[in-house]
Length: 385
Image (cartoon, rainbow, N blue to C red; front, side, top):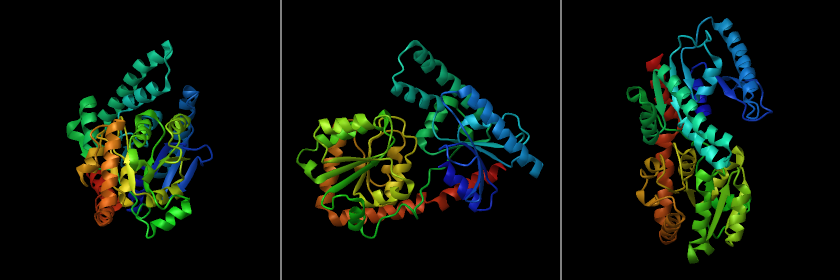
């Protein structure tokens, strides 16, 4: 989201500087990419104190050079997470600049969810689980107070923000966007399946997730086991990597689903669109904190109907295209019932399914394509600068 919104603002004429953590060690510290000037810093979770000092030094040196060149602060600072802007401190490049916060999710709640999944049950872990979220909430709150506007991706996240921090009058809703030139239906899905080595005679279900507990993937595997006679017609792809990878594979094997479920691991950005094109249905089985759902948009843009759980912002997106695709809750039983119902509908009504795919692709392109989203961003940014 941050990359595409920054890239989009750059493409309409803004001079964009991006300061971010290194996603991979082999990335350059400084780079010109898609019209943006990017500064990256390292972050080692095993040594956060040293990382803080080194990152602060690197960022401030970069901003020193920027300020010497322009001799004025940035026209606008857009924040996607409080850490980076707090590392900068009171630097003249951002002193006096208006701030805008793109609020993706509550920092403290994200930490608590991750901590609960790590199983750190000793005294130190229990203390961290109480103290750290409060500290993160406080840092987040102080940052939000400094901002003139706060952009949220969904009504769900607006409610979270208002409950936790207030700031009702500052909030603007701009949904996430999707690259509809990349994520689009294939002209020949049969050929796409052949290329990927996927069965041509099955209803292909796809989910693309980080393999973590909150994503609900264990429930999804159980749901497939509950599909009865329909199981023989299904083929599920669980794409992604994460801490539950081996556990989920073992669960699938134990339930006798080795022929129905495959785990291709993390799919590269270059190949991801191809998997969407091959599938018949996307499934989003989230259990907790779905702040928006980029994968949902990617699937819909590819012409895939989405079976989702009523968690977070998922209903806001899915209900626009048909409430019948939303499960009653996030349990395995509810997912199984919805998979059976919707797959049987696809089998019984191939022409209606074809028209639905066309409608999804067209509607998402018009509403969530990046040109429309960037236009909304430009309006909000222009009102602040």
